[in-house]
Image 1 (cartoon, rainbow, N blue to C red):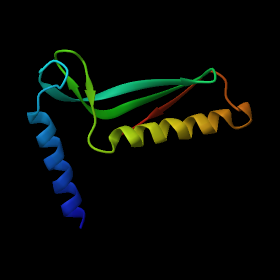
Image 2 (tube, rainbow, N blue to C red):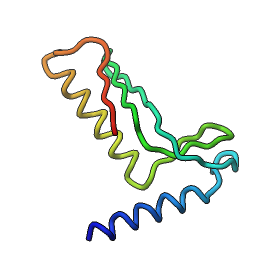
Image 3 (cartoon, one colour):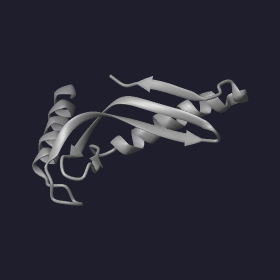
Image 4 (cartoon, rainbow, N blue to C red):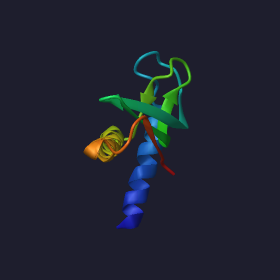
Length: 96
């Protein structure tokens, strides 16, 4: 079961690397990126996110479901920060 999940993930990674950028046709490269989000005056920064980035235009790609998981992580941090206004400013989370 675990082997099937790993092999399908590796296949998706390999397939994505072979595809050109849909915006400019450039080559996609695996990278770890940082994304910043802001809501109601609170900033959230997620770092160490695995993504594919176009070397030509900088367009960012995620594996299927990756963008949804990233949005869920950001929402969770916002919920934590905004609960009773416990935090002012910026929250940072590192993904490894």
